[in-house]
Length: 371
Image (cartoon, rainbow, N blue to C red; front, side, top):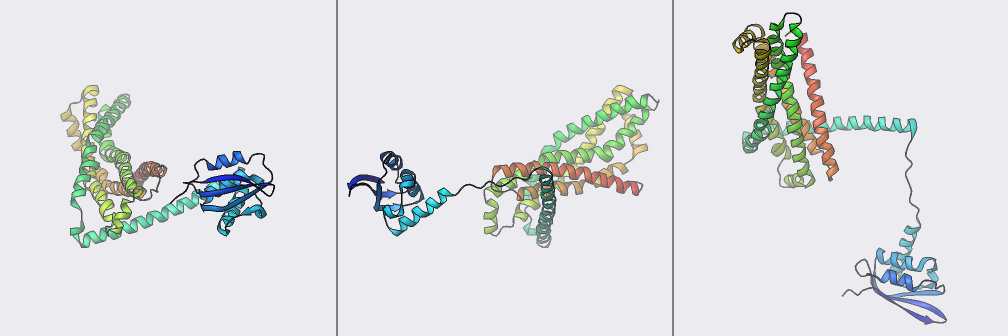
């Protein structure tokens, strides 16, 4: 049975003896420490009898040392060996001065920061290769055994990550097409070539803006969602529980998100194309007085479907990059909320950067192919 910490002061051989009893532990201290400190104030000739102490931990030892101060001498303590050893360890820890790490300054700090950045870049590249390896293994298993494919989450993610984004994508590309048409109409009118605004709208929307706007919006919407969902599961140790139960997280979490974006991004690109052309038609009709029939006929005659297929050819690559970045950042989340916030932010930033870079690479490739 636990006994609360207590003490008594007695006179023995012309000196004062502090007799401690009970459990001098974190749970048994209560106010015994402050009371002992107050009782021993201004008392110099002291001895301590700790033989009545039942249990003692670091909290109790610290309370005794703080009350005794520099008056606690080893030759004036009566206690068991375990208690004496604990008092010695805690006393030594109290005397240790905290060491502050020297922070680099100036040019050395700059070099250290650059070095950490380079090391982080290589570590990030290694982590990406590990993620791709796991993903390829999971994909190979699904191809060999199609019954392992989880169709229910794929369909749910197609609706949530793809189809639910259709209104915002259509609205954004509609206004992008309208702005391009307005700028083209104002600039080309000065040269008497306002009719070429149709080609400007068709090529820019069908070749670039449809897939670019779709991918950027999905990067901000789906990549962040993937990172947050998987990251929260990582924080709550749900992914560890899945692995203990023999479920591969890449098959259960990553592959359905890949498949969902691969299936929905061509449809979203088509919707973005229609919305962008609709915005251009509206502006050209109202500003240049060119009818929608004339607009569409000129698109068919002078623009053609080649530019649309060029834009659509980028869709699978964009989908894979967005899903990979979002899922990988989610898998890298640590055990704290700050890590989750950093990874979600990194997912959006990295995805948008990768989209712009990939679009530029595609532009160079098609320029070399003269397409």
